[in-house]
Amino acid sequence: MSEDKSQTGKRLSRSRLKLGEEYRILGLLGTGGMAEVFKAEQTSLGRIVALKRLKSQLATNPEMLERFLREGKSAANLQHENIVQVYQMGELEGEHYIVMEYVEGRDLKSAVKAAGPLPWKIAALIIREIALGLSFAHQRGFIHRDIKPGNIMLSHKGEVKIMDFGIVRRLDSDLTQTGAFLGTPSYMSPEQLQGKNISPRSDLFSLGILFFEILTGDKPFRAENESSLVYKIMNEKEPPVRRLNPEVPRRVARVLKRLLKKDPAKRYESAAELAKVIEHMLGEDYVSMAGEEIAAYLAELEQRPDEDKTRKSSEIESEPAQVELKRKSVKAARTTLKKETGLKSRPKPKAEESETRWLVQTLVLMAMTLGLILLLYFLQAHGWLKPLALLSKILH
Image (cartoon, rainbow, N blue to C red):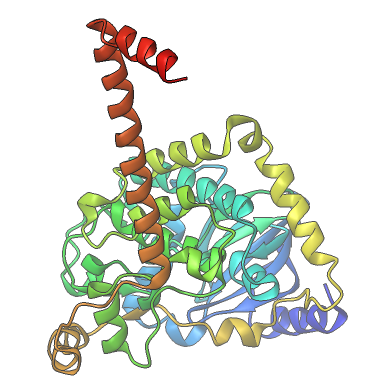
């Protein structure tokens, strides 16, 4: 922790954070749209924690307060190695706070920003760990609704942890249709954007966008405005991942393609299924070394000479905030962009055509080989190969 940041933390602790003697503020970790996060020491237990405080100007907003409290309560009910643990939440002198596990490391967004595309095996390991955490949450009836790189922490020990359950939704929730729009637009599923019923498979679509981003260094859907973005996510196919990163194996590209299916029923049935698919793809031996492999990658990342090893609060503030999309954005995506594009089908990219052609050629060759084997078997069974062998001897 730098000296400046420590001084900032002390100043904030004296002026705004009045939580008694239980927590000693060590520094400011970051500032988001809703809250400030501090590194603190819980003096009674002598342990380092992350203390998240709702901004004072939002404490009087019932919706923001409910969202903040929901994050604490939801995460407190999800004790899993791939989910940031909540120790305590409360309110003191009008200040609402959540005390969480402190993860020594960096978030996935800053890792991609620093290094660009991750090695595909490291990326797959991270996706498997996130899938395990999501599976645990889904089995207990929680949908995260805001899976993105900024909400995934990587520890120096190689741990992968999901955080920020501020807009989590219960499967049995009676939230209004408007509430279904909450999230970060670039990572939202088509059904989430349209305000339809969401399911655990909605989180899988968001995970697919995250997977694409850490493999290529860029999001699959980009647009100049919200309406265009909504249209692209709902109607257009993602660019072939292998065109942007040829090192990604075809089997990984197929996993990604399934995650990004527009129809939820065509995605993986569950996060648990996805985790098993990745484990089978990487092999049990490599998966068992997940912690060591991720930790080694982070250590290598920290040693890069031009790497900015601290995530500045200004970077956090510039992140896309969790927004509530208006229905007019969805309508605009269906109307104005229809006129602009005429709903013309996109020509297949060359990389996709090449992969399709290779697959067809392989299938044709396999069919011809099988046909030849069956023909030889048939001739042998009827004794017709003997005359052919005799004729061959005569000719030679």
